[in-house]
Image (cartoon, rainbow, N blue to C red; front, top):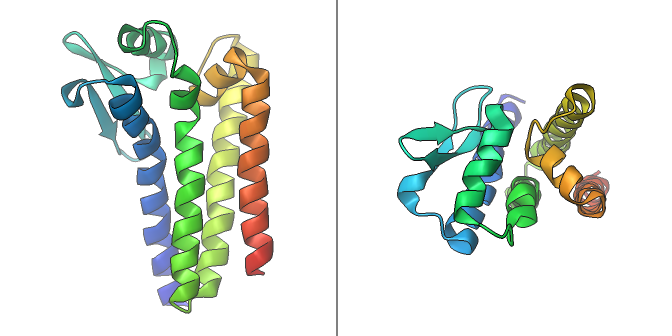
Length: 173
């Protein structure tokens, strides 16, 4: 049991990193943001991708400033939806790989628990982000920004993430 919990903790940490790696890679590879102007921050309770705005770093805690800074690099917002969805997409791909690795290593319970934790992380993020968006009336995170940009893209992301997580969990149990 201790091995399973240790693997789940390690897997969860990797998922958090992979989640932030998604928008980082989209920013670097698709948008063309220089490496000196984008950074993954992994502080406890404050994981995010920061963007340089001159001498300051824009963080998602001030989301309107964060989007304005992003638009300095992607002036026509060509890749904005991809950037906004990249965290959930990367995390979903990551949980498939990690869960598969756990199954192949013979620790199926760790795979099942990791899939549930991944789904919980995403759902909490979405509910907090959308809840604050509807309550405050302003963008508060990547998902609310995606939702406002395109409800269809937001729903498509929810369906994709839900089907993959749900199918993976059902396949494991």
